[in-house]
Image (cartoon, rainbow, N blue to C red; front, side, top):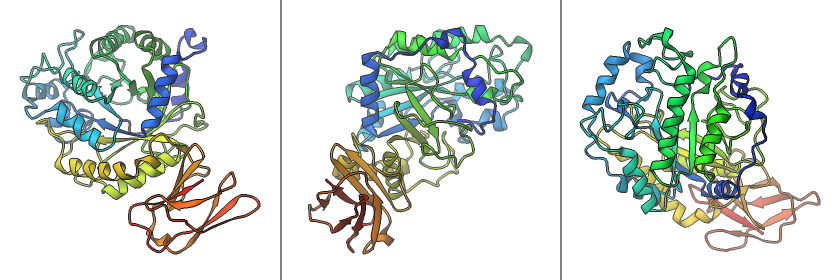
Length: 438
């Protein structure tokens, strides 16, 4: 994932060839795929590659290794003998997730499938010798789990990738930079991913920020890649982690560690518009790191994850929650524990999350709202509000307010301007007390 976003990113992201001026018209299959995706609300992000063998996170080559060739030797020791795609997908499904986004290829350039474009892949370069993506795709299709692929525009190992502001100390030969050659390589890999593993829900790009400090805006030929994807699989959605406004050819707007419209990270570009016509997604980590880091045990609690999911849903967005699998192929036990807790809650209260849109007001400290038809779900997540009254700026007349769990009526008053005053019962539960407005 990226570290910073500079002011030149908007120019870099928009620096696409003339074909980008042709309006992008999504197909009916694509529109249906967007709607399906937006209704799912919870996805699982997986950052897994040979970097996990170092147990120092996915940026280990950039942050600590002075030689790309020495780093690449980790492939010869990568043997995830405990990887079980069926168990992974079952755990995600039991947690209430609707889709998985898997790092097919991160910034270190190692491919997690049998790629004909480079021997630097899990089948040809490791003693494991098996196609992880093939196994994951089979498990996802068998269990009706939607599969997305993360794909990095950066490659810290290949000389033909023109060096940006990262990967400067790994021993690349900058005189061999050739973006046209590298673009053909990427497009050939994307073609493999979209023609070998069945229906793919989305391609999730990352890395255009690597050239946000160039003196001349870098031409990524993004629209060319977007059109390639849509031609191969019209229903496949395209998202790009550039933290800017939607550009032609994109189907999802992505926000990293931020809710739509917020900028706590400082990465969001000035002037970014939150789309009102595209699905929105916020990605964040379950602990602090994306890739496995052995010392990072600072996992969010079940309550914290659910409160984040509720807040994200209250913004009309999906939550893409990341886990860094261990080098042996297992998911961390604490991550599985958290998923189990999330799933238990979702089985009971998922109606107030799945298939909803944003409520009438933005999430506030201690409460949020989701909407489904003529019902609005008010989520009270702060126990300090128990026994108190809150004013909510709803947009229509409320006929009835009831507890989600029991159906008991909840006292309310509504002013002429539709402002609703709700009295929260004393017995509001710890994680989320839900009031249904009709």
